[in-house]
Length: 322
Length: 269
Image (cartoon, rainbow over all chains, first blue to last red; front, side):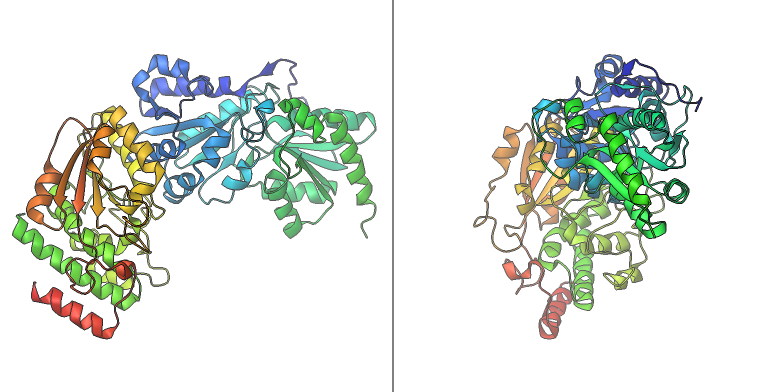
């Protein structure tokens, strides 16, 4: 797996987002940023200082923010609507459904600080329902990049894609995993490591943990395939079916509820196309206790060591297949 | 087009709307009748639009936020040349593009999808803001119901429109005094509207929303703040037994009532 660059340096993916937004914004005056008082947390100060008039801040009013985004697109602009993912998706879900997805408005929804990035601020600020809420909506690709390279590539892709997009970003530092110059393809998983005993699938902040777990499994003589699956909708059916048929077991992990997210989307494919034992790791359908994002991921069994144990247990289930 | 001609067209639209509700066995006839004069003035006098180029970048924007009166919009769009008039006969039929609420991805002339209330005004604010950013000279109009103003999203948008200085935005509130199950007064009475809107930094005008002589100048008025027209209308306007009766929010006339309504509307054609 020489394509995989594992750097110990951690990157905040918001930086990659705004770097691309500002680069594209310099050439395309139609690009505008829309936010709900989240100039700082969306890291839009650079954009604002360059083009103050192109930063549309509606104040703390998420329903209006999403509706205004749809109207700006109708007026010929290319809006990037940015807000904490918990409020963007939760407070304005009906606007996302009617004004953006159903109207097929060319609006890019940028969910900032998704998952449990707000850690100790608690479940009101956690956004571990957003895959479930958004992936049922037609017309709306749902994407959670795994590192700053993929974030930059996905923003670039989204800006050129004619239609709505939901891009789910974190503020928690992650190492770069994909090679420089990586191009984002909607609905295409990236093979980060090949193996034939089990497939580990993740996106967002969990992908690098899955890679570490694969290293631990290799130490035990288990070769795991690792797929980075940023696109939750449309799901990469081909990669999931191949993983099921070629490795016989699939373990997923996500910074999201185990109900309705990436694991559920994969399970829908596995059940219909190639049934094999599966395990879905995530927040197990509860409101999380107090703790940082990293603490909570460990708490919910998503440390590399715990992922390794779950993989071993899942592989054991393979032997019981008739 | 002058007010007399507009009145004639509005009566024709009312008649076709009534027929379509009767044929489809569904619709929101009360609110359609209250809003048709406003729709007629917009589409036959005020809006700078071209049926041949429904996506022209400089077209004026109109958003029907009270999307449940979609039929009145379809009939108006058809009469204005955006749709074949015979297509009105497909209203609510399987696979018709004329759904119970308007769909901009299918129906030419529809700007955004509405149905859930409180959506049109925020989108219209975005349209007007876009014109400010690009220098486009189009004007944006949005029609809401009066009960619909109970949605908090509208007040988010009203505050934002004032903050953005959107003098290119006109909100028309179809103030027919009734919502689905009762009067506004007996539900959650936001009326009177003008002082509230003015407190948010808007200009507010009150008119008789079923009188072309008052509708046209109000729609054509330009100032230096966002403009709200509180249009006092009658639910079921034009059909005597429907007028100001809450039952006629989405009731369908029976054969006898239909004949009476037809006769009343035809008499004035």
